[in-house]
Amino acid sequence: MLFRMKTLEEIARGEIRLAFRSWLKPTVKAGTRLRTALGELEIASVEPVEEGAIDEAEARAAGYASRAALFVDLRTGDGRQIYRIALGGLAADARIALRDQDALVEDERARLRARFAAWEKVKPGYFPAILRLIREQPGSRAEDLARLLGAEKLRLKQDVRKLKELGLTESLAVGYRLSPRGQAILALLGD
Image 1: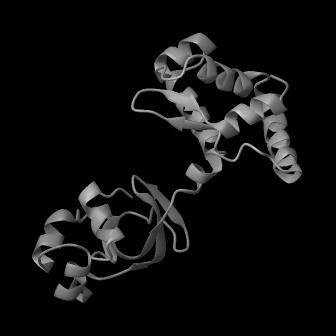
Image 2 (image 1 turned 45 degrees about the vertical axis):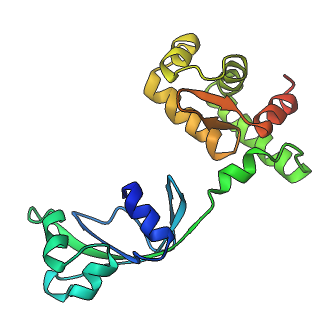
């Protein structure tokens, strides 16, 4: 579920509280959070709705000037169902605060060691190698990192996202860099 920056800004200001999507099946669930350019957006509820049940006030709450304008944006037909999505607030992206936490308590060290041990069973040395390469060549493009690691570019990007989820890397305009937490993990792994 994607939102334009303008829409995200309106959500942040509380001007937009609803979204409508036409899906074959829902792509978000109530109680989850979506990562956006402005933070994590809470999905409060997701429920099917008939076209006739959407009124002008709901269209405006979704950021549209009118009900008609809303339906211009919705794709219909082909077994699609319209869903009303109630939006909660935007919260800071938890990964951002995590990046600077380089003083790891024992629970975190154990959890991160276990995560890397599981990865080691599948791809020995691969994830620490990604971290070392990013540390040594910050700002390198995914394509270049993949070539140096002998990996496919798309697979490498997925794997860097796994590291980013742990607060170990951060994306730059081009490429990546290691976070302070990433530096601490390399030290923990004996690098």
